[in-house]
Length: 105
Image (cartoon, rainbow, N blue to C red; front, side, top):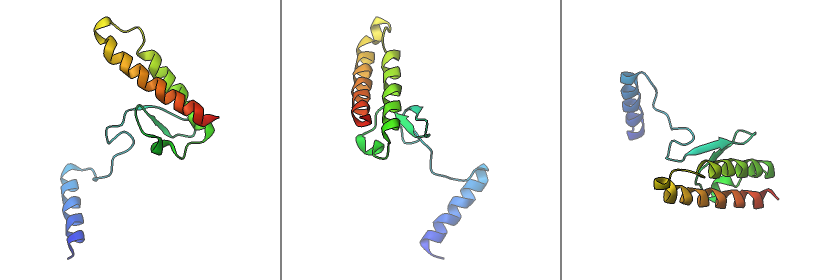
């Protein structure tokens, strides 16, 4: 038995104990916060780099910009104790919305 076969056997036995197969996580499983989806089904993340959006169409970028604008608005008018943190989130979403709007043109 090769080391790879042995590892797969161990994984399947462990999975059998819990009743669920061990699978890679879906969207957002690596800590990314999904704030919406485009009409084509692509996830829009709160804070991902441009490399994540390289396969977005102009329509996808326009829809992602709207998702970030909606998130921006969620952080407006919060209580004073949260103002500094929420203002930082507003700036982040404004920056991402602007980038998506530029890419949509």
